[in-house]
Amino acid sequence: MGCPPAPPEKEVGRGLTKNTLRRGAAVAVVVASLTALVAGLSGPATAETEAKLQWGTCPPESGVFPQVGCATLQVPLDYAKPDGQQITLTVSGVGGLSSPHFLLVNPGGPGAPGLGTEQMVSAMLPEKVAEQYAVFSFDPRGVGASTPVDCGDVSKLVTHPALPYRPANAHQEAQRVAQAKKVAAQCGSKAKDLLPYITTENAARDIDRIRIALGKDKIDFLGYSYGSKLGATYATMFPEHTGRMILDSVVDPLVSTYETAYEQDPALEQRTQELFAWMAAHSSEYHLGTTPKAVETAWQQIRADLAKRPAGGRAGASELDDLLASSVYTQDSWPSLAEAIVAYRNGDPSGVLSATDQLATQAVDTGQLAYNCMDPGWPRDWSRWRQDTELADHLTPRFAWLNTWYGAPCAFWPVAPVKQVRIGSPKVPPILLLQGRYDAATPVIGARRMRAVLPGSRLLIDNGGNHASYLFTKNPCIDDKAEKYLLTGELPADAGH
Image 1 (tube, rainbow, N blue to C red):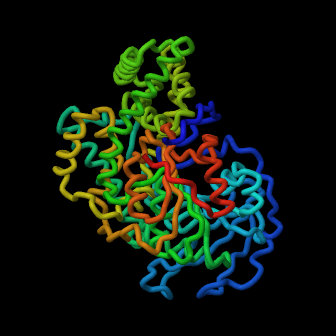
Image 2: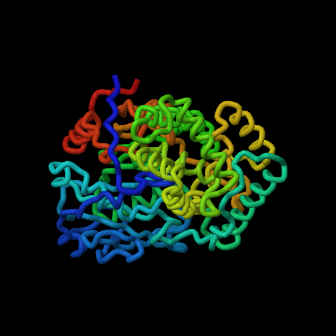
Image 3: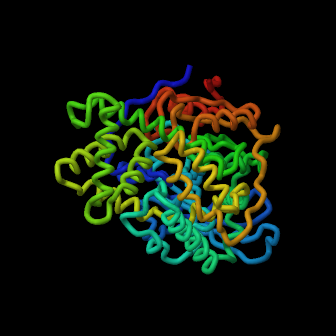
């Protein structure tokens, strides 16, 4: 038996987006002492470097609370040349350096900025856990306040209303392909020297440098979504320095990033049907239909209307598709989505336009592309992409082409991918895996496969579908077991069925 889903909560804002964990608007002031943080480390580092973190204020653009401290750390661009060119990592933390445990958090992405995640997690931790843990995060290499991949202004490469995701003809497909080529070429022209080193393996090595600088023999870790891949990679490479580790919404360790999109497509469709059923169950409030089929009919009519007459001249059918794909990641966003759609039907497009404008800022995520495109398995022959997507489109016409275009620049990436660390080893200590059974972003098959390659790990499955929900969805069945693990190191019984 898995854990039952927690009831949905109506959030301020959109909650979890397609690319990263963004819940800052819902977080209260973090109550934590930074006296030890801003004073810098006390005591020597415990490993091969004397590096120390000098804590101060965070970059203003990071938007973190004043209670959070930030520090910078120099790490090799190329770990094969440790004394060669160095790049900067920016680390953030909240809590006291005298805390028994240090929890490092990664919000996923890949390529999502970490600064600010520590304050969200610290605010959500149960009091007993918060007393034991200082919480840290960092902007991974290539991202944000760490040495960033700068592809220039790529937003101008995507206009709105955007082209249809499913091409109506060869010309539309060629336009989309040309757009993907331009993104890849622009990144190559502006960041080619950095791109070969933006890899999960190097990010794991960076984590170990952070551990050393924090003066810890072992680092505890919480990774959401792609953060599960990063954490599992770290545990494989540095098992002797891996402490208590929780991986939530688990990435499939046995398939390529290219293949994960095709795993997502049917999961996204199933979650969409659950969304339509939820709207039908709330027909007295939203009046979109009393059955899932009726709601889908209403949705398709709205989509057709937007295709003919884009709202505000910029929100068309593709923008509605983006909104749907983003919203199925967490049930907490469903009320906001329904309200925006109902308002549009009643002549007020402001909700749809606001969501469109927010998603437009993520239309081309160069940090995510930088990590994803360095993974092996991306076909370089576009005809292979077309063949695979057309096959997927027969079963999941709503999402097959959408997912394909999202990763399409990787077909033309200007640097060659690198071999990844094979996750899993008998030396890896036991890890706690958390997973939503109907999670569309990281389908449950990935968590089961991660459980299989990490000997001794435990898998708890929530019978809901929210993505990256630990601490934020407030499911006692999951949270209580994770709390006990963080406090004692004792793993719960496996519930991965």
